[in-house]
Length: 532
Image (cartoon, rainbow, N blue to C red; front, side, top):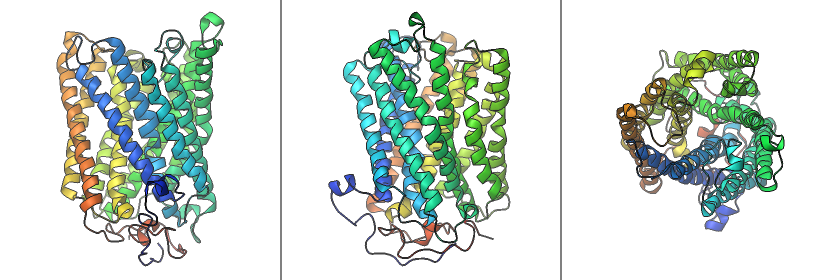
């Protein structure tokens, strides 16, 4: 794609030493690594809460968490941590920060100081959220539904809401930075249709971040004002409407699903073409489908509210629009499979996670169409069927892509290789454990088991025990993955500049990259995937 640059003696890892140099850095690569460490730490905390929840649900009756309120608090923190601190910032802020300027042939993002500020917003928001533990935590669930969050919730709810509000600024600043970077800092010769598909995914995500996140920020601010000042936006006793909160919340939170999944789709495009040794099939279709998903995502929030009392006509319209999302998603899936067809596939660990993504995300997508159907959603609403669907999309989609992306770009980040055997072992445990955990929940939901309950009837015991066993398999898999990453960073063999034989620009510079990414300006003369 472009000429290579000689290895620099002054890469970003050893450019400056000391903790302060990292905390004040403006280098997008270092900021990406700081996001990586932060997200992994938050993921560990969220995973601990998940295991506590699943351990409680291993048998009916009071268990390790003791009572319903403690269970609700654990569920709230699991959801809030995983959504606001892991999945939303995971790929855009971590992998996007590191890779985007390298993909574009740029020295950095457009606004380096804004980039550092976005990381601090995430940290400050997380700190405010955890401050709620001093004030009895929060037991509303990560959706903060009114009127419960106003009238009956724990006193720490306002802290969690304000923490999510501050973290929203991190998302907005990152999205703004990526849009401007994509438009203004592309290398000479790189037109929009010579950009890697990961950039298209990040660009589409950034549009959603900038347009949708302020709606959540305003909603959470109104909720905090109502809780503290007694203003009647959502309280029916004061003339407010609790359903209005749901409209505001889901107008952001369903596009937020695509903040989580669109970058993951970009990662998968990179992995499939690199490890198939084949030019991506239907480049423009995949690129435009990312923009299509971003556009449609703003018009589907009502499918969360079929049973909220909205009109039948509104339900039919939202059902149609929700199914419409399946069209650009199916385009991507078809093109990925077409790329694999007759490709020279190499089953390295990043590719295993990409194939795992295809399997799990397809199940999540198909069950999403089921839930978009009015008659089926009425039956499945607020059951474990929805829990399973959500996790097949988010965990089976986003986290599989995060793991695949980490393993793929690890040599570029640290200039070292990890243990391929351990990486494959982590995949086996995560993939197997995931299906053991969540597939039984489809059956539980069809049987009528409601979600968000800390107790259940005896008839649901066996499938819950299977699900809990699977959750511990997932935990083991991620621990193996963490050990693999740490061992690779400390003792891994030196990586070549392009160990995968990939064609995009980041592989045309040293591993790890020099401080300014390239020793001289790359010239782009072809598309990003010119294999054959």
